[in-house]
Amino acid sequence: MCADHISPGHQKSEAEHRLDICTAGNWLYERGFIPACDGNITIRLDSERILATPRGFCKGMMSPDDLVITDHSGRKISGKHEPSSELEMHLLIYRRRLDANAVCHAHPPIATGFAAAGVPLDKPLLAEMVVTFGRIPLAPFAMPGTTELSWSLEPLVADHDAILMANHGVVTYGADLISAFHRMDVVEHYARVSLVTELLGKQSLLSGCDVEKLLTVRQRHPN
Image (cartoon, rainbow, N blue to C red; front, side, top):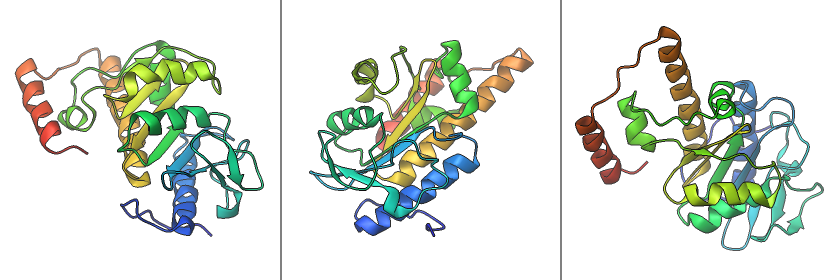
């Protein structure tokens, strides 16, 4: 059985990280963020190893033994299955963000709807969103599971903690898995609020002055 919760922090045993990935997979699946076998999750175990979800598995039905360990070039070190076909995207993030130790890729329906419409989540509608993300940009479309997908993300990774991928989904990352998961959850929440304002036909945006103050808070207290 997988753990019932994920505690903050990166310094854990490999067994604890395996349980955490199973738990996050269950959470994402139960929320409808990753239907069927969609999505992928990784954790940077150390300077040489990545723990990854297996290819072609429902993330809500994994066991710790199903996970795969690769090196930072994507070569499998251990595991009875193959790693996710989108592992290269995760490896790019680890190379560009030394502060990131976990990555979640999912298809939350409202946020993915914005991505499919070609609309970034970059309007200052919520104070919490500005403090958490600044903005959530949209990467241009690239075929999933290809090097081109990493190329489309590369210009955005350094300055953002969440990215919409056009006609595809969302990727988030953080210092540990709970941070990466929470960011995915917040992206979908903000997408829901944004959609409601669109349906109501009115958006009351924060002023430029207020945004500057909130960005100052974000710099002082990074998530």
